[in-house]
Image (cartoon, rainbow, N blue to C red):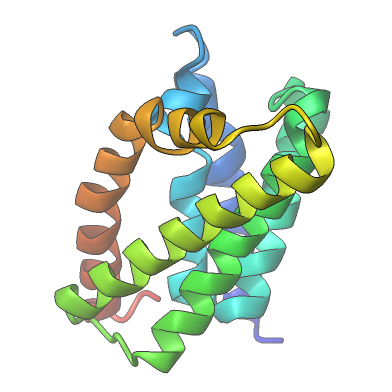
Length: 170
């Protein structure tokens, strides 16, 4: 492990714990704006699949321990979903050799976002809400309610990743 990777992982985890606090004054803001997803997705681009997944696991657990958010009933599914986001962005950014190419960053981001949401839906259907989870519930929670957060991710993350890579910071 390189010192830079550890420091960046710690930074992304810290941002993932602190950033959502700015949104918690708005009811249900976490599930609408998805602020915890942003640093985890960027961590995958910056650190690769293993550290991306680790950031995805540690961030919601640490946030829960410090701020009780996400709430206990949502913690396991958030850990799984964010781990998938971090892993997929890390893996796919290596597969597509994104560099600072904005088009490739978008492809990786969109595929990772879809993959994470599919895993979220499957885990709810088979484990966390088995027997009580429908396709309509998944579409509503993963896409319709989260539309503002999805839009923020699609605007913010590619620009940040591209600029950070051009500046050789990640």
